[in-house]
Amino acid sequence: MSDLFRNFINIVSQYGEVTDAHFYDFHYITATVRTDAGKTLKFTVDIGEDENND
Image 1 (cartoon, rainbow, N blue to C red):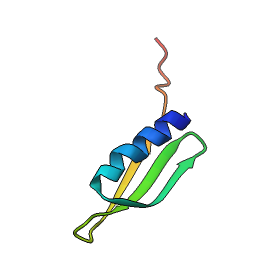
Image 2 (image 1 turned 135 degrees about the vertical axis):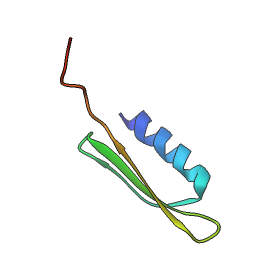
Image 3 (image 1 turned 90 degrees about the vertical axis):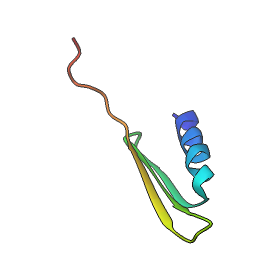
């Protein structure tokens, strides 16, 4: 899972400077990015498994 977090940070850092990032209990990842234009972007990835195991 650490590769997932690292890849996520690499992707969102393309939008600007990552000012905050968290990986919560393997359930979701969040990151806040400040762009060169001074805007703040927030990214969240929800990590879940489909409970329907056909």
